[in-house]
Length: 479
Image 1: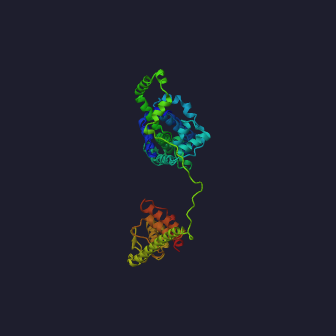
Image 2: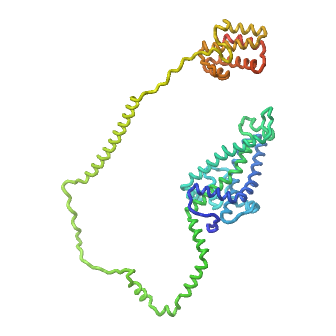
Image 3: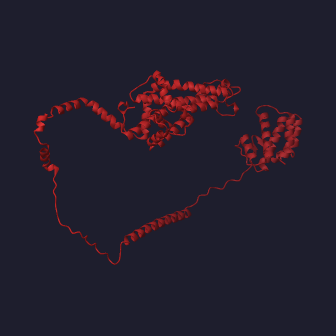
């Protein structure tokens, strides 16, 4: 790469401006970038789906798609690097030069990916050919002051990829994919195998959405990192100055040639030059006042050094230090006193200000009825369980369940201290009661309310034996 062939406006930019420059480059050359990117990445992702289908594990396909990201990046960087320096390669030319971008440490990049600044470090390996210790030193030099921005770029793109694009494409996939509504089975799970039936929450629709997100976002990530890399080299190597000088030279090349010809045409002939003595000419020039003059001066000076002034009998040099220490101590004491005074003022104000106390809570009053059922204990039979069992044997199953339900609610509200409100639903009432009573009693309430809801709302009458069993369990639940 030669800086003189650069096709973009080089200048020193902030890191955020440099990343925006990379996105602008992708916006300008997106057709030349996305076509080879898709032609290269889509078959690899299809192979990843094939591996996941063969293993009947959707998460394997998603992992392979993520793992092959360094391969996708190299295609995008190859196109952008050529376009920036004045060459727009065709798709045929990109794949014809595949050895150039596939043979730049791709295997090592797939095995070891510890760096968060992947898009910023990639040009060092792919474009400069630096590897090993030289590559590490080069990346360390380029990464000073911008490695944090490169890592932030990676994390930001990861968040957009996972939480924005993947979720959006996933919901879009759910809209267009058919499903067996009766069983709730995902269409892609039926096509590819078990999918998420093995306990994994990742399905093939998730892998498809993630692959689409990678296809869309990865060129943006590589372009932003490449812009950061170009800006760093501009700052370190003065590319902008070199480009400006070369353009000035190209613009004024004709004038320079004419000046050189005129200069050579005005050179005196050798015979004229030999007539003058160079030493005399130099001496004449140096006589001008602009060059100044010098002269030698001699004077007598005593070798003995003059005596230093004698010190007084008492050294007062320590006094400024003592004064400074006392001033600092006084400043500290002043700040401590101000803090103590402020704390005392706040304490005094907190004692003087009236304190607001809200009205005392009203005591709990059991409701007279819940869910349309009268809960007054005097309106219930003495032995609720026996009365409910008798009703069940007579075939009055709904009345028996209603009596057990009323008795349980009255028992909870009037005897167990469970604070049920008229605003509670039946499910909320069960949850509140289960937090206040024992586990067996909570389980009995769950069974009783479930049977009542099936009978009252779904019109599904239980068996008489089940109602009798609930009546018999009533005594042990509320013993």
